[in-house]
Image (tube, rainbow, N blue to C red; front, side):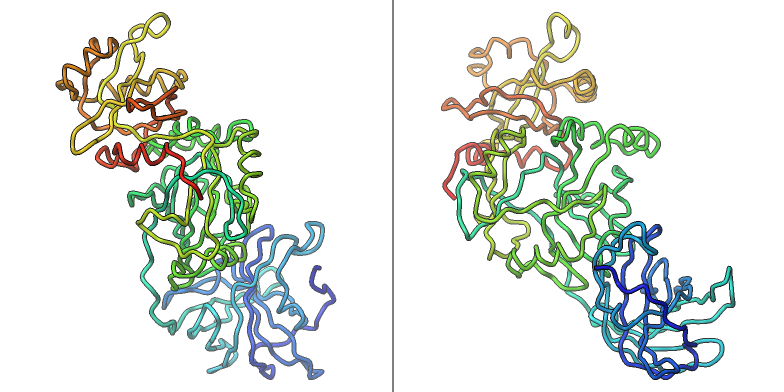
Length: 479
């Protein structure tokens, strides 16, 4: 239900009797802003919310100055409003409570008011300095005088997971598995996207640079996946065309044709507090509360109990699979955990590219297949060739990548090369590239069955591509 729009006579914040509460509402209207409201008493002796619109929110560093525009005062009932205002009403858009608590007025005169906030997120002292009327509204400057927040926890790292088979359980929650790139979104006064190998990849996805505007928090770390879609289905191949770009002009061009979405599925840090020790249910509840979804950030849907049905739906819709997560489990950064299970329709493998063969027919003079290997006991082990899954762009990219690598001696024994005719004419290159391939099975002979190329990845080193990891990922384990 929308808040009351019944007008309230404005009071002068420099002279009105004081109340003791404040509220800040994050308002996703035509322009994102914070509505800062102090409880004061009007001439009738009634408490009201004296209000300012602060486009950048109250400053968080001493000396910073943010514009604050006096807006109509509101009924006290407005202090509890969080929800949607219809688009055809004044202030239409999403509203979330950013902070609330008590305040004390330290000083006030004709030129400024100085107050201290003791909120759930903000603790400190600010000035509001009156600068005069502008377009029928009084303008003020909000200035932080002192930050009184206690030191927070250090932010955690990230990672899960194992592989499992579909199952039902009331102790678990199930989500679609997004065929994208895992990234931690660090949201404060700006957004930083960090890959699983701790690389800052923000520049590659400019449309995600303002995710922090959709997060109701001082600072937060979200776990999620950057996803590109093709006909409504996640497409790693489309995303591949953006992953390696760093030239801003080229990125802007490609982003128009291949937009991305950040699918958020976990919250591991919020307002200076490490949340990794909380159960998943509590972290997810907080995530749902602080994220305001839009075209660039969505909440990954979570289904309790019914993993088998979701897996069947994922198969029908062409998704990669589902994730099963134990509802009471903490977040375990940097570790593989049986509390998060991948349940895949098909399997992905991260492999080291050690060579290539020339194509025939239309692919004559370019890559026919890539030679795949993984590390096994410190040496490279052959796991097959991949020659399908390429489109024109990825084929040209693969050829460019091969030509950029130094040639070397074969990494396999002569017995392996003799056993596979396609290897006898292979061009061998230094083992520097990691590729993602989709496959149906790891055979008893240690080969990937029906592999299909999905793309190269930069967030994993060749040494991390091991046979043990490949075998455990392709062998289903019960949930």
